[in-house]
Image (cartoon, rainbow, N blue to C red; front, side):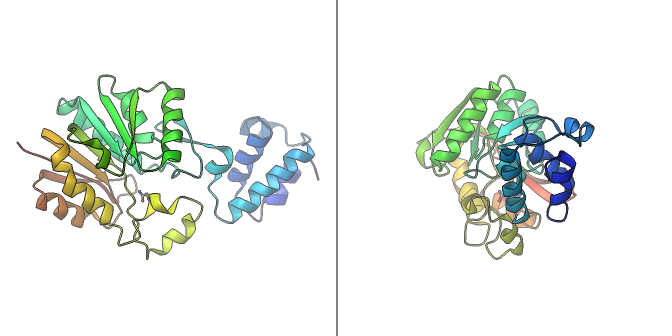
Length: 271
Ligand code: GLN
């Protein structure tokens, strides 16, 4: 067994055809289109070994992006490693809203807390040329991934090693955004995400602890009229809106993602 079509057929009962094609193209350093056009192409022993190892990992729940080392977000390729969460399309909802706020509220400075691979910070820096973007993460390894993404994609972002606001002193920003760990540790769904860093997915308490911490501390780091914008779980909209209102935010609202789930909530700090 050594041709492209034979390898794909051998993986068919374990992973889906499109994932198989993505990893095979990756190991053969070619494109999926080439594989479709040349199913008869021979593969090397090295490719076969790497391919079947990948099929095994994917069938156990490993994201394809950890094998290819890349995932697209907002139409740009971001490098990912197991030190960071794989970018989700849900987070594009946060980008849309943040760009809208940047436009309408004359936002000059922004910080992304818990940046991970850097998708939010880098995308905002590239889409809003005048915006000064900073980003934090508590993980050195994650910051390395984010830094390399910013450099490769040509984004100017200031990176800071920090647990939420801890290393920021008295600095204030016009916009604070974050996609913090918000999955409840009891959520069954977590079992399917075992390859991703648990600390990026759940706070280990109730899925709301990091959201609470950010909402409570954000007012001290927002300039007058500044906005706090948070991604959260599909069932956390009401409680996040309550937390924002209790912390003194006004114009509190929630936006749904493309799947129709409440996904991003924000509030404004009036002066
Ligand atoms: N949206 C991710 C998921 O449900 C979770 C991301 C997060 O916890 N910040 O898989």
